[in-house]
Image 1 (cartoon, helix red, strand yellow):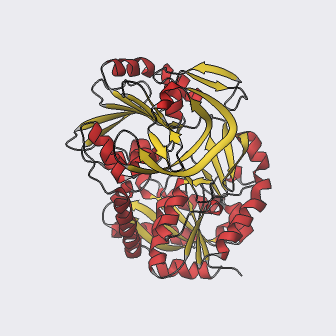
Image 2 (cartoon, rainbow, N blue to C red; image 1 turned 135 degrees about the horizontal axis):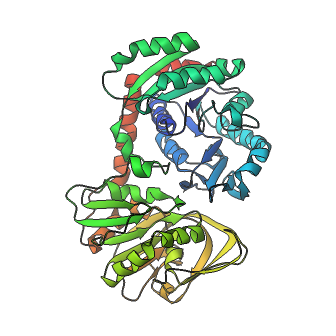
Image 3 (spheres, rainbow, N blue to C red; image 1 turned 60 degrees about the vertical axis):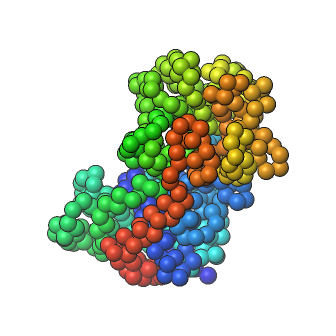
Length: 488
């Protein structure tokens, strides 16, 4: 039985589709509907672990939270995790499918459509309303052949579309009218409504612009949505957010420096830290030096550990880090960052490129062997250095072993140790992502650095979702959108 469904597409990437779908999910959930989010194809190195041990895009996990349902691998059946400029790891229904270059994936992506439809039908069977998020833009007609992310999927699943334009970046009339102009007639008719996102100022000033778009496209306007600053409290998914949303705290007690490596992954680990008022979180980009007055240098996760290790050295950060350690500074490596801190990284199967071994940064007495077996699991445990429980998740290839593993960061449920600490206690590594989302662990960790943890992170995210739903209820015609979804 077909259920009401609406696909939210954008005139381009990063126009706010993910946040809008999350807000709509909460708004319609507050109306008593069981809402399920869905994204046929996502591209992101920020992933979440589902209860059944699979991977989906972080945005779909946030949308599931907004809808008050458990995340499922079927909510994002195809996840592309870029490893190089021309290739990505392919995750299908939560599991590693393989690694392909963009050219090869372009030829084979249509073969994944049956798996995508299978997942959509599974999600549809559980829902009163399915909210589907597109990827990029349907106006990218050069990618239309074999498309499973936008109009190709909308056509296969017979979905009506809401098209979103971002006025903050400029040219919103041209982007909406231009999309109408380049689409085939049947696909243009599939778009039933449009919305303007991220408006700053008095929305009535755009009334004439709305009339122009409506007259030139025949689409109904669902609303003009003002800028929503609380979106910064939601977990970031796009690497662009590292420059647009991350900022230093006020009245800082401690400074944390994060080198922004080229294939940074699961960087939402930083979200709780950037919200802490007593922390100055400094994102160090290519060509910059690691600040000499940093209390902690945090090496984040990476989708390509060996490649990012070379990138790290190319910036001279290995020299900066060694000086930081000599001064008595603290270092934490998470997942790929943990692997980099060791003595050696071995890739006997050529998982990340040419088979072989490379020297690590040498600050932890551990060695890592990469393998084809991928660990994807939610974890609970306790910190070893202070009294605090912790929750998190692992997503990684490889196993790290060595003398410093005798001083683990965590003892996980079941008695398994995780991570390593150097004899002086200043350099630490862990495979556990999401550890700073745990308020108790974050408070204990920051206290050990001379700071304090003040933010109730989960409550802060929940408040943002509630405020977002109210915001969209105010500025979007939800009755129109529900009518469109039901008319499918």
